[in-house]
Image (cartoon, rainbow, N blue to C red; front, side):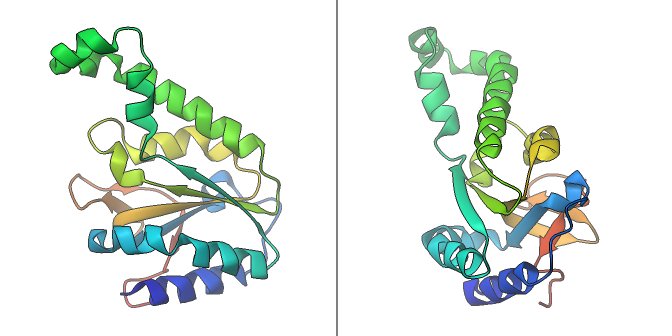
Length: 180
C-alpha cells in the first residue's frame, strides 16, 4: 500500500456524512499503514489536510513525537534521572496524565466539523500504550480524531509497530481493509 492509496481511502472516508450522535469510538479514525511508510505519511500530512479542507472540514494537528522528551526535560528531577534512567519507569504514570490532559486541551479547541490529526503514535512505544491514550480522550472528541498508526489492522485488532499483542478497538480503520 502506498501513501496515494492511503490518501484515496481517506478521501473516501471524508465523503461519508458525519452523524452528530456517533459513539466516541466511531469518532476515532485509525489511518493504519506499514511502519516503513511512517516518514512518508508524516512528510505528506499536508495533503491529508488539503483533502479534509476541500471536503469542508477543519484541520488541527497534535504531534506526540516530542512529548516525552519535552516533558521529562522540564522536570526538576531530570538531572538525577538522567544519571539513573532505570528510575524513569516510576514516573511514567505522571507522563501519561500530562499527555492525556494536553490532548484533551487540544481537542477542546476543535469543533464538531474538525479533524484533529494525531501523529507520532510510534514515539509512545515503551512509555505508554496508544490504546490507553485513545481510550482516555475518545469521549472528548467533538468532530473526528485521525490517528496516524504505523502498524497493522485485521479484524478490529490494531498492533502498533507489529511489536505487541494487538488491542481490539471499534475505531474506523482507514483503509477499511488490507486490500484497499
